[in-house]
Length: 140
Image (cartoon, rainbow, N blue to C red; front, side, top):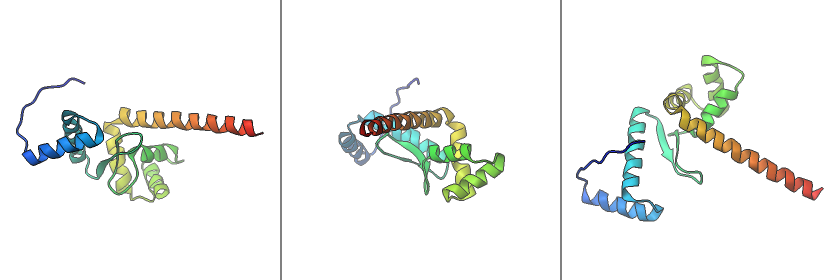
């Protein structure tokens, strides 16, 4: 991803909050500014989306629901296809249809990112399963 140098004025209180937050999370101010701008634009483009922090990093999620990758995984695994898949996924997840649609629209724009999340989580699950199986074998 290419970058551009941009100069703009920022309120001194916001500047100080960015500095403080950067110290708290071990990130430089420009990194935080890029993150906040990117996430803000994405949330504007996809109403109903937020970003959450967790052990695996920041991830897109529904405001009042699960992470996008979780919705996509359920949609992929239901028996139905098309609009029926959306309805079935909504039932499985306890969401409204429009919430599933919000997640799918976000996924449509950021497919590679979400697929990478799913692949990474699948790898971690496979690794955990291997460790568990080895442990079970040792106990036998």
